[in-house]
Image (cartoon, rainbow, N blue to C red; front, side):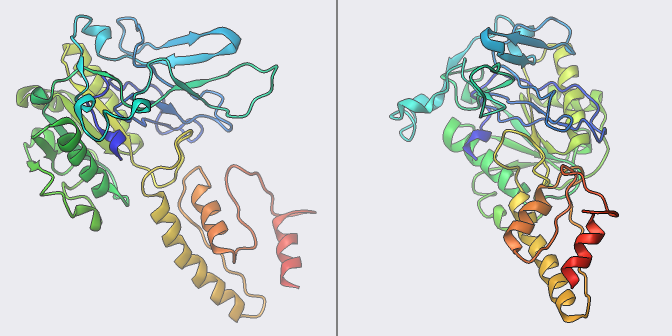
Length: 363
């Protein structure tokens, strides 16, 4: 989780798109080392995008820049600090003096490093869409003693929320010498109702062993102007927003208002989805717990079905428009005869349909 440390990138997150569309679900996946932003798009992700930490974006906050290189290389960038604060000074990353990292030469990530969307390609195909590689840069845009970060959780609960909060606080403190971290209580409305709690490594030491979120959460309550007013009044300059689609849309609005005011405030969106429906990354937090819990439902249905003549157990799992939980739970269980997922079209009646398969299985 150390990649959730905020000081190794000047990037701010800007998201475009319809967050509620079932065919184009867009979530910010922002590890603040490189502020990687991923768009979840149609089917095989033909519109997947990534961002850069060194883009030259036009003044319009809603604009983006597609960088095309030789051999069909495509990298789409989003804005960051230096687009509207061009004279912002950079500083040596505190990790360069950290005993655990300074001796590892391969630890630093080059600004030009990228990760391809398609790992396997043919010799005559283009290089396709790439993503800015996450990881620590040697220069940062904040000094440790000036940093005042805050963390807010919004929307429904998800396994691992307290773990993310804990690692943010401990990473900021142990790796970047940041001594004050604010927890915004009860979601977005906590900004302007001034509900905050001081988060320290000691206070968050054991929270990963508990469910829920120690700083509370809520749905709605988003008032962009009031939130940014509060951020400015308190001197907060790093905002970590943990939430799902609607929450990240709110994070985008907060960024736009911050940019409009010309504030040196980094906005980092951390996607909260147990569905694992974010491309390129290994998995989203909470996914493993969801798969583990799904085993209980599958096992119960399996016992029930085996105990009855012509018994059929039907288990519906979460996942919205993706089948990762269903697929991984099926593979882990080994008791499932048929797994239906949105990514793989199926039909019920006729030759080769689901009903024919079930009839043969019951014989």
